[in-house]
Image (cartoon, rainbow, N blue to C red; front, side, top):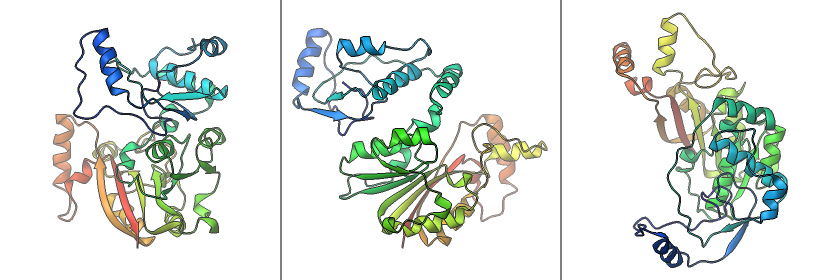
Length: 336
């Protein structure tokens, strides 16, 4: 039994207008029997968040949860990866209803460091799907073909396949360990996207996803032209990129600093920096037509808002003050 749809080809969901009108175990049983009309089971290749139904001997062989980790996300993910690495078959009981008490998934920096040391992979960068980017795709499209540049362990590609089992999903990923995991459910290759020359991919893809990738490239302008060539006419590129106009960057510079960080807008691995205007120009230069621009923000204190108001008075009339609030830009552009 799998709680969430990561790793599932499909999942039986509780209807939006359906409540759980039970107060005791007998009521739960009646409710679940009424709900579970589909008793089929499906094989899945990997599960990252779960309630397992498995043989006792499997747990004895694997040893259960590892004592290396203390917090829920890393205990679960480590167990799932060991389950998968042991090549154990996994069955999704799609006709089942699982009652779950609410709980909080605690994050622990020490567990994160232990996980990275054990697997050579970053938890946040490698295993969290970019579902906010998928909201701008037609995932049910017939013959769907999707390419993700910088796919890591393939969590986003897996989410696409879950929504559309017939979709063909491809990835470009240089990290060998991450690519090895993603290859279980996607075609993943180690290509230099800045010099991409793949005639077999010409006008192949309905969507190309670049989630926080462009800023890591030496020549993002040529990269977008390369990717436009493998995009179908009418196909879309979906990009997320940090916003260098965020108020926090201005605040740092007014203190005479430009300090790189482990993550965020000034991630030390970023080679290029973009404002809204520049990322839109990059896409247009590649022959892509802007469809949508939307932003994501981080929490702002009253002090932050007062600082932003002061900065806004310095902006020319053609620059929107919301560019100071945007932590990240997400852009959808279509091939003409």
